[in-house]
Image: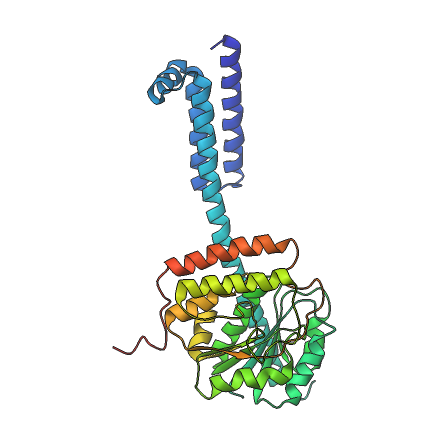
Length: 122
Length: 243
C-alpha cells in the first residue's frame, strides 16, 4: 500500500468515526446500531494502519488481491444489514398497521359513546 | 342489536357506497352495516354515514386486507355472530346477500363464498387474463389442499363467529386475502361452501388485480400460498376446549 493510499484510508476512517459519534451524540441512531457502525469505523481504521492483516486475511480466504477481500466483506456486510433492515421495517409496518386499526376502532367508539350520551343533540 | 354484521371495505367510493348501503337496508336482513373507509380522499365516509351505515375510517390507506381485518376486529368486539363481507363498488348485488348469508345463519357452513363461476352464477365476463388467473390459483389451491374452489378471488363471503376470530387475528393477510385464506380455512377444517351468485362488472381500472399489479399479485400470492401450506393449520378457537 502506498503512503497516499494509507493516508487516505486513515482520513476516511477518522471522518467516518466522527460522523458516527456525532449521530450517537444527537441520539439519531439507536444504541445497537451505534455499536455496529462504530465497529465498522474501527475495522476500516485497523485495516488501513495494519496492511499485513489484510494480506493475511486474503491468503486465508484464497483471494489473489487484497482489494477482493475488502469488497467481498464489504458487500457481504451490506447485504446482511439490508436483510436485517427489511425485517425491521416489516415488523414496524405490522405494528403501525395494528396501531392505525386500533386508532380507527377507538375513534368510532368514542364518537358513538359521545352520541349516545347526548341524545338531544343530533 | 342484530346478530349479523355486513362489512363493506371502501376506498374512494362516494358515488356508489350510498346506494349499496341503502339497498342493503331495504332488504331488512336483520343485520347492522359497517363501512370501513380505508383513508379515502373523497367523501366516502360522509356518504356511507348519510345512508345509515356505521363508519370506521382509517387514518390513512392501509390496503384491502387490512381494511377487512379492521371490520373483523370490530365484529369480534361487538359480539357479532355472523359477518357478511361485500364490495363497495356495486360488484356484489345486495339482492344476492341473503343467498350468501343464510346458509351460515342456518349453521349449514362456517364459511359461504359467492362464486360467479359455478353453474347458475355469473353475470359478467371478466377479462380473459383475470379468468385464467382465478382458474390457475383455484387449481393450485385445490392441488395443495384437495378442496374444490371455483372463485378464489371472490370477496362476497359470509362467515360465523369462529372464522370472525380467525380473520381478526394476525394470520389474515394485509394485502390480498384470496386463495391463501381459502387454503387456511380448509387446513383448519372449517366447512366451506361455494354457492353460485350473480355479480356485476366493477368500475373500469378499479380492479385490485388489474394492469401492472398483476405480476406483483401473482408473485405475492404464490409466496403467500407456500407460507400457508408450510405452516401448521391455524388453531381453531372453537375447537380448543374439546379434548
